[in-house]
Length: 229
Length: 284
Image (tube, rainbow over all chains, first blue to last red; front, side, top):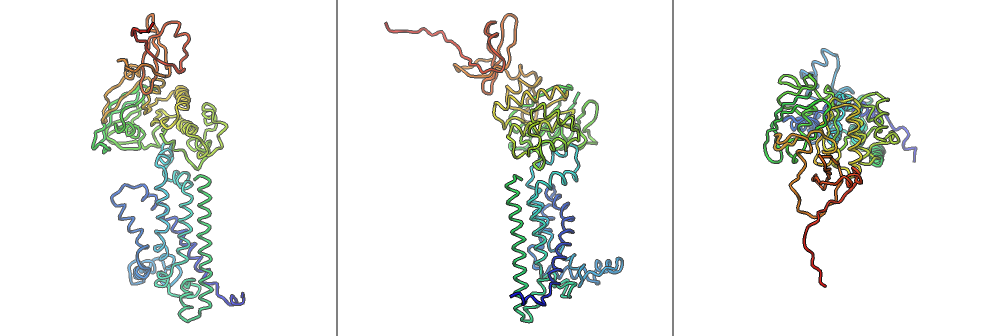
């Protein structure tokens, strides 16, 4: 049975995971202050920022991909700035994929963190302020340790979602082997050329990995609840 | 001396209300803040802690905490705050909860010793009882040696026995650290036992301010026949003794003889009854 795995390219999988790891790291850094702000603010602008953050969930990936493509291409001021001043090309390469993924997966990092922060007893945070601790120390030592399940969900779901993205990647990255050809794009191409065997194997691997990732999240969160967090 | 003169518009459950409080508190005093719910007690505490904004001035021992231009953030005010729901850091052990405030092990051990928590220092908050949690919370509040200790109904969620025990501990800590304490409470016996002064808030204004005895004792007789209560105090007045007893939510004064006063012990449960002079008829 395993002979059918011979000659199978694992490049697309490695690329998918590399993309997911980098995207998750970047989004974690960006989303932490954003989610904290959204959870604590009473500003009238809050619904505006929340809607903007959630937009990638409802938009068709092709729409998002199209706008990102337009924004990052050399013809736009942003793309031109990056290319001329910093010498970084942002479309049809891996860097462009990372930027696009960060937009696409943003809500999957922000929303669990935000609702985690919102679920914390406000008095606990205030007790930390009264103890003389600033916001950053309070987030690091009190808020984050008390929302471990939400933190875990945010990281894992963002990772899994980035591994599974297709539309945006195809629009912004195309399908350049070892550069932008991630697993989901590879499967699409196998189907297009009617290589169903390989499409099956790739798809099955994706299903198994995704299931295991989700299973680990649920087991972890179940254990956390038992501990009493 | 703590000088408070603050104003704040509140939007409470009963519509808009102006919280307008002028209060001078002597250093080392224990002040009970009482009044119906929604009268602004908690908001006043939160304003003193810097957790809510208001207009006006607050100065503590000559140091300005708030005036028209500046307002110190909670981190800069030397306060301890005990929340009704404990608000312990769930991710830290009892000892870590204390050391988070101040890395002062000697003080932490002293506080844990005073409140008999030293056996529990490595336990997580989720494994403690309500009374134990509130003790930890109290210790945590004392960790930065506060000038002002603020307590928002700290004992209202606890059973009466635990409440009495913790009242003694609160008093002991208040005296040991010489802090000025403001406590929100609805329980007259608690107020009588702990406070030197009671401030009654109603609709955002102070409507009564005095000693617990003057404000809480309702001496205008009761129509009921027999009560069970707790003996709080026996005061000698001229040739008689007055026993002060907490019955339910009320305090009453009863005259007792010299001999009776000797047999009674403060803190014990007593029954209070009256004998009516009704002629009794009996068939022969």
